[in-house]
Image 1 (cartoon, rainbow, N blue to C red):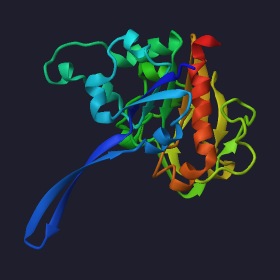
Image 2 (spheres, rainbow, N blue to C red):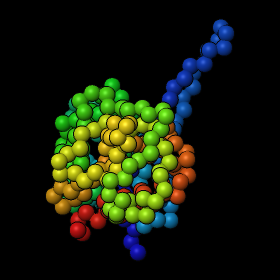
Image 3 (spheres, rainbow, N blue to C red):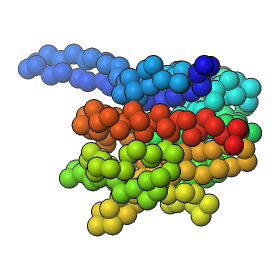
Length: 258
């Protein structure tokens, strides 16, 4: 069986630290990958995952509709809009290139599957810096981004409330309470969207998982993380974690076939 091709863009970062030891100091730089739990969950699955770390996306994310259509689904995770807007040709040389946010919109309308996963640089993000609000990508998401910092930290944790447990994405996941999540991005559900899961009412009832269809394509928004810190280790180790993402991608990748 031919595997469905999925592009995961984002989910990496570089950290710089300065170490002070009395009179002396030195600096270190470390590189981190945040999507290893998803990579593991999709091993030996019907999906062929291409993991494009955030630092590669500015140059290597497809610049044509045909390039995007090499994938059955595209996942944007913890990747701000600037990274796709500011190709090196634009940023360093002042030369025009295709607007990849418009290409993503066209990709969905033509039958592609799009998912945005929550994080500090997803939706509107920390200090509003992710900047997906009022973009062509937002037009084909099930949710509208806020115009301000949209992070909701929930240090005490919350367990998802399933609104449509019989939906194909949630099949088999409605028995026991889900492991705790520790935060999410606040968004506004669009009228045409399907709400699949939300926070408990006493914790704000915010949307957690939503889907929509646009043109021939489908889109999904998961407002929490793909791994720590908002999605902690017990959630990753829960058998439902792999099932949730495999079923989510199965639903997304069937866009053009519906």
